[in-house]
Image 1 (cartoon, one colour):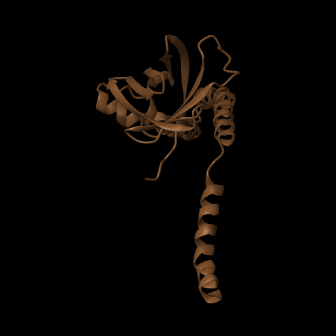
Image 2 (cartoon, rainbow, N blue to C red):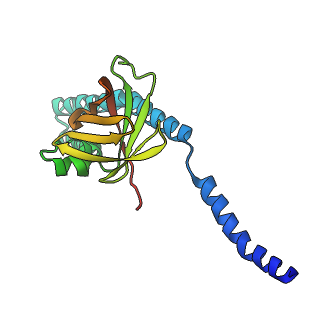
Amino acid sequence: MKFTNVARSLILLPLLHIAVAQEEMTEPAELTKLRDQFRLKVDQEIKPWRERYVLELQKLEDIYIRDRKLNEALIVKNEKESYLSDDSSKKSSLTSSPDTAAKTSKMMTGSVWLVYAAEDKKRENLLDTYHFFDSENVFVLSSKKKFFWNSTSAKKAKITFMNGDITLAMDFKNHTGTSLYQEKKYTIYLAGKVPHEQ
């Protein structure tokens, strides 16, 4: 009898350890919210510096052209173009406007959208986060659950939510959109894309 209990313990102990490890690996909702808020603030803070860098490169290029230092002007021009193409290529998958529901579905997959009250222009109070895991599942942070979603047309989608649908209209070029739930309108902002392993 003792041997059977010891054997069971030895078999169950690794399984218990795996279950506890999996529980510990679940990301807290507060962490997700904090990360989303931080990334959005960082992007907002760094945008003026990116624009300033491009302006300063242009000024330097103009000075070299004026001083007839064409090799230096070409090097600066290449740096500016390289910087602009790198920056735009990072955003290109999110900024082109889809023209069909299927393309909208593809663009939304993996994206994370932050939800604010329509009147919260400074984006100070994050109300919710939508993470579109795949072409059918969206994780809504406030409910801590996944819901079914689908693209209804170009730049529009619908989340089948608890007490009615959430309808979304996205402006991919400007990384914004609107969310309508129970006749209340919200503003949504694209935080970025998160790769998801199936």
